[in-house]
Length: 174
Image (cartoon, rainbow, N blue to C red; front, side, top):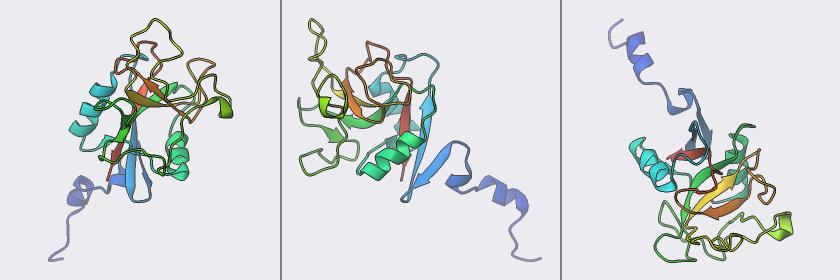
């Protein structure tokens, strides 16, 4: 019939939600990218790969969004890079979209109050003698890499992940 789109055309242009490994929340799409060895991908490398994929590391603005992203993780996930850092100014955390994490914004830092053994962000205070430049942020996964970390909460870490905590990152597509 004239004007009809052939079936092969429809196969080429699948909606984002039809792509394997992509999940939608509030009009944004998320993908968990895993790597073979924990600690093998720096935060800065994950950031660049997310951009190459057409997205950014995930920006989390609510408890519901945090819970949704956590629900995408599997039991093998130790920790995942998210799109928050204080690379420009120590203690001033900025999301990938440029918004500043301030007192009025949603945050989910690990702390003693929720069962952690440190109050995050701490720039590495728990590791005396280390170069404490913890400017990148990860969300702790279902299988925390150590007993100090609490699942679904955030922790600041060095870009190169010297303790091999992180085994994935979350890309957000808008």
